Length: 97
Image 1 (cartoon, helix red, strand yellow):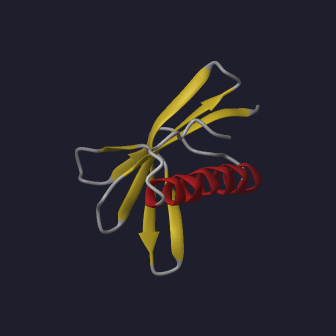
Image 2 (tube, rainbow, N blue to C red):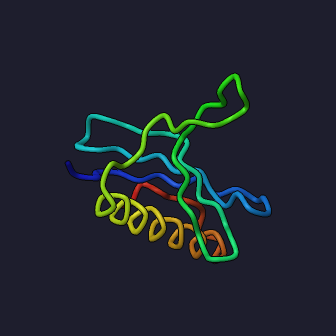
Image 3 (cartoon, helix red, strand yellow):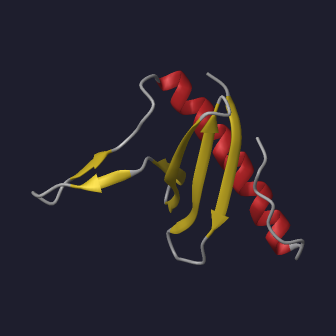
């Protein structure tokens, strides 16, 4: 499975830094991943739903540590490029892998 597109939508919030949309093999998309700032750095949160008991369950998530690491590295790299592009006033073009 190949990551074929990543779109990052920057947010101006304290902890929520961006939403990411990732396309796999040009045919499957996962929306609403969140880039969150924490004391230990950035965290990539998978899309989730609130359950009746108040807990949250991931809608989709990586199964292996290796794929999670690959996904995080690619999304965070795209996020950093978008932050630099926005700071330079060059607009946002987040369709980068």
